[in-house]
Length: 370
Image (tube, rainbow, N blue to C red; front, top):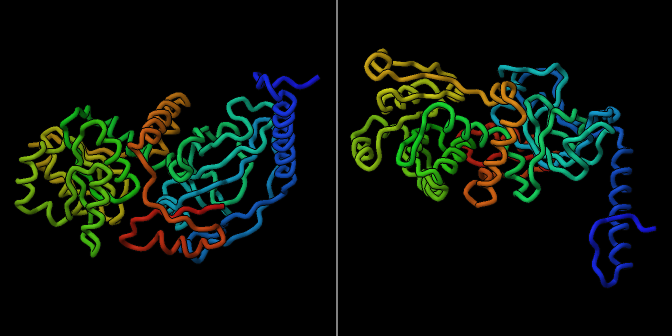
């Protein structure tokens, strides 16, 4: 008796069933071949320091797949600033050494343990938390360490979904009740988070005032951000110039400021907030403290907050994370959200990728393709 595959065509039934059976057998053979792997290639560091010096490409043993584990093939993994900080030893959480780099990425499930229920072979998954080590070709992870994403979205968008777009989404949702016509101001607007803020805000009718450092290709970058939906793109030194008064004739002063830089840049953002507005700090690229003028606290009653998406994920339920991913994936399908500008690099060319990721004024995110 033929196995039951659901509805089949009424003509050429034998051919259809044979094709389906062949597909099933191929997947089984493919899974069996992958399971025979006892190791993977990974970017490992034994000590903290300069990533280009301490990272090495090595073979790493794969543990057996337990009842609640999944074996995954890593498809793509970005290099984020937090990855660099973790290798340098300056991040808030540090894995036990030796460790594999990379906190974000996209993988495909190739085997599941006998008690796994939330994902199946063939699913695309991303990490639920930081510290899993995604800069490798394969991994055995716990079922609870991953969450599925649809495979009908672009691969690079899926690989960069779990950190920057989630950070942007939560900061726009959780600190001020933003309505169409309201404004948000942000520095580091060309970063992955900055680009996501622009794209998530635009369909909601929220104005974005996007601050970037001056550079030779400022005009080209400004045009690219405006093509994503940016309302205004300005240089940092414009924040203290009379042109800001002209800008605020076309949109209201911002309710929300998003700070990834710190130092003087953060202080300048505060100057332009509405009374009672909020500044949320999620990064410190300048490595300078955030200085808040007393007048901003007393006379403008501004709120100064911080946000770390890793902590949000750890405090929230699976359902809350799932709901956010569903919204972001809907924007991706509608063409309203896209991956940041990316440069794809093979795992073996990791040194070039690390050097490029640490260069100043970089606008393209380095993606390790395995």
